[in-house]
Length: 421
Image (cartoon, rainbow, N blue to C red; front, side, top):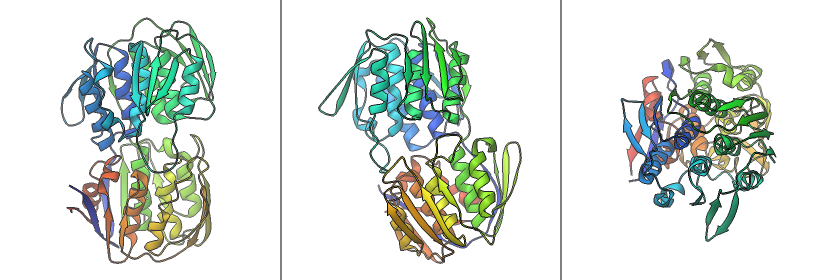
């Protein structure tokens, strides 16, 4: 049944919000459990739609999964798992399902996958994955929307990535963790979820150096062990609440995450004029007046991450002057701004990758549609700021990356509710 959010804006926000586990880290951590046939315990698992779908895919392959409480999962990919039982319909609903490739390559000589799904933010081919895996000796062919993999001749290699691709880096790390010899990944991504995977693999017995830099070296081992691992907190969820806290009367504390993961984002908030105080695992943010325009470009981590572009846009609509946002990666990232324009935002998309935002402009409540996870979060923030009532359709898009976002905002005093259509 379709669901949407109804929001009455301009309500003050006060209180504390606890940040949950990272969706992006959870995807790769769960995929990495395929690297061992021993039992793993994974804690701080977010119950977001993309992660729950990935768990269903694993379960239907034969992976044993049981919840050990609200956030912890016991998971074991024993000898009875089979890639022949992959649910391709579910795989087509989530981009993180592409991370199954690395784990499957470590366990099976041959398998096939369908093209992974995900957000409508632009073309997201897996050509970088395929090119890198071919350098390892993996034979890959494509037919009828399926990719066929043969891993009989996988060997150590030096791989230079065509781009700082997070999921390609993660798939390579998993694919070579059990490959004899020493593999070097140059141009590796350094995002927190990549660091999460590296720490988990080390605890499982992998030999890895350079995680968190753009050069990762992995020496293959014969076997990886089960592991007890806790997923890191979601920096994108934290950023969402920080922007909302800056735009509405009151003061909120965003707790249980690492502010160091958002260094450049927080530096931009300072430049724009946001009033906040940073601690070791929290940030307190107050309603901020006299916001200033800014120039923002998405860059590989530790730069300003592409997923943060939609999140910061509502803030720029309330900043004085002309801001420029630039996302060189995804050609449809800014397409959803037409929904913000319906609310009164003055945004000019000058080409598929760049937009000017003129402010400050008052926002008004209207009926709008969530295009993807981060666009949905952006529209929720805008609706909280807007005068009157907003209806945001396609709540399931937000659910793919945020767990009960309306409940967390309600606890802070927002007037937001979920309604079944």
